[in-house]
Image (cartoon, each protein chain N blue to C red):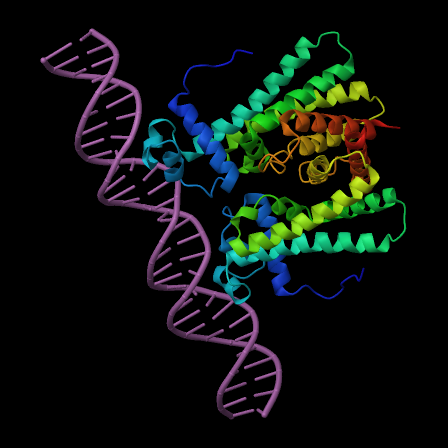
Amino acid sequence: MATRTDAPTRREQILKEAARLFAERGFHGVGVDEIGAAVGISGPGLYRHFAGKDAMLAELLVGISGQLLTGAKQRLREAGGVAPEAVLDSLIEGHIDFALDDRPLITLHDRELDRLRDTDRKLVRQLQRQYVELWVEVVRGLYPDLAEPAARSAVHSVFGLLNSTPHLTRPGSLPGRTGTAELLHRMARGAFAAAGAR
Amino acid sequence: MATRTDAPTRREQILKEAARLFAERGFHGVGVDEIGAAVGISGPGLYRHFAGKDAMLAELLVGISGQLLTGAKQRLREAGGVAPEAVLDSLIEGHIDFALDDRPLITLHDRELDRLRDTDRKLVRQLQRQYVELWVEVVRGLYPDLAEPAARSAVHSVFGLLNSTPHLTRPGSLPGRTGTAELLHRMARGAFAAAGAR
DNA sequence: TCACCTTGTTAATGAGCGTTAACGCATTTC
DNA sequence: GAAATGCGTTAACGCTCATTAACAAGGTGA
């Protein structure tokens, strides 16, 4: 994992702030002037970096889905001959890291998909589907008694569980980041185990 | 539970369609003309029944939170001296019924809260908080080793799991309603058990 | 029969907002 | 040093959309 040390480019600043604002108030709920103000320039200045408001949302959503899928594939590759349980643990860990580190993106992920142009929406859906299928295969390997539709439902439900982090955020009332991550991890495993039990 | 047999009033029709549309395209994404068209009258006609678009959303969200809380209290009352596990099962069952039967409302529940006027939002949040606290107490009674912040996080996460039903909807690819309900129930119990394990 | 309330309608208003136009000014490039 | 390019600015346009105004018609009760 190469850690970036150079300053974020203007495009990146914009995307980050747009993600935050979209997550807070919804795509239609925030105006371009606000996004501009959040990075210190004013409304129409954004059009030097993006074709329009839609384009920002599209880039965000495609980026999220792609990152999730790429990360998961990477983890599967690294876990060559490892025990199936360790593979599932790795997937869960990756998803939790993402949910905790990029909360706004996780929120957007399943909330604003319908605001995309047809072509972008199809792309995002395809990436999401691949990500789900990847989990389904691992889960079914671990719990062979689980029929495929049930496994898919279980995976979606665990995503719901892991993506709940935005709700339990607030100020630091929790056991801290690592504690939260560990709790979520245990619960996800418990949920899968219960789903896969005869 | 008294089952209604009389025709729905106009107000109820409007609320139902508004809920569906808001859930599909977001509060800002649907216009009053659309809502009106969905019940056979046209845009401004809605103002004979509601003070404005905001009022519809407010009534929906307050209604949801109130129903959830009332139903949960009812279930706790009915389960007087029953085993704690049965109480939790009852809460889970109630939540699942709601999530499966009123999918659009569940979606709105945690998605459009910020679009409310201050006073309404505070009311909804208070109802939600009471509902959560009610679960937290039951869960802690069953898993005494679970600290309160962790229990609250666990409850929120299980809500995320149970509220994932909109995602796994699609056409009938699933094991059917009762199968889905049973799967969700098992997973919720498994998640709590894993959270409460030493 | 006559007021009146309910529940609609269409037309007008006015605000908000995404986008484009026209322009300015560093900085880079030849 | 001049031209081009990158990155801003403010002003104007045009469209959408919630809300209000003005009006109509059916039913109900005195």
